[in-house]
Image (cartoon, rainbow, N blue to C red):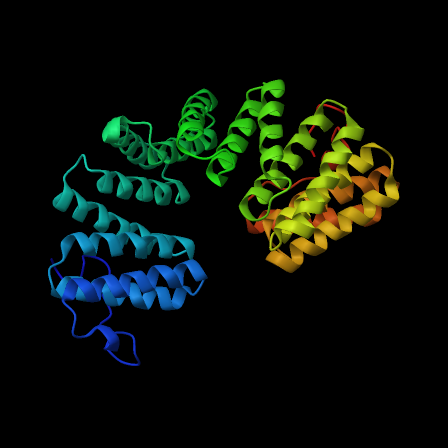
Length: 378
């Protein structure tokens, strides 16, 4: 195996400052395991710079010892790190190498090969290469379907990834079919309160809404809320997401009081329980502001729009694309309350952001003509 690893350059890690000193007398596979494990721990703790150094050190050891299976595992880890840090083209190169190596080491039908296909599929989806992503996900699903007779959590995860891609592509029936299968598997293989189950049920509910099946979607959202509303961490995040989405569904059906209660419960979870999700809190502020505008509760609406805009700016900066909905929502509010000059300032700012992200601009007339009655989304 070439130490250049095709298109990535392996940086030689000198065994200094205790990185490898405790294990230099071990066999090379033990040194690789130590470095790879340290990389994984650093990644999980958020120390991505150290994680990359450990992974590159592990790759150097694996290359020297011709540890091809071990090298494929570390390449997989390094590729996911590159993806997490936005280095998508580097991630693509590394994950391609990992997949090719696993084909060579394990064969075309092994679960580790399927794992690499699944990870590369996620990267292709992030790059907008949907056809390649679909092929990789589908191959992973096919392999996992044979492993241990099917019905494993890894199969459910691959099905969920494929469904997410189909949802992006507008293939809602295909998305629903795969998500429904994934939920059925998770119901058997995971405990009732597992975060993966809650997340998949949430996604299934959103697809059902897009398909026009609001009653079925509500049942799914309420299942997630029940699972996570009194919990912390990921389950609380999923419950807050379900509360926000169910509120939007209720708003569509003119059930304003129920929608209001759901939005307020979501805000309480984002703010007081989940933590670290300021962007999600900002989105829910914006959604509740739209509801308050429909209810003619204008003082509350204005405060909520201002909070949403400020939070978006604090989290993502003054020119991020997620500012567009609250800026234009607030502009609509100002038009409704007879402040067209202030509205024009916000529309101008929104259009500057739209230009920056190659999005079509909007006019004041388009903002003013937006129907905020039942049946329209904020």
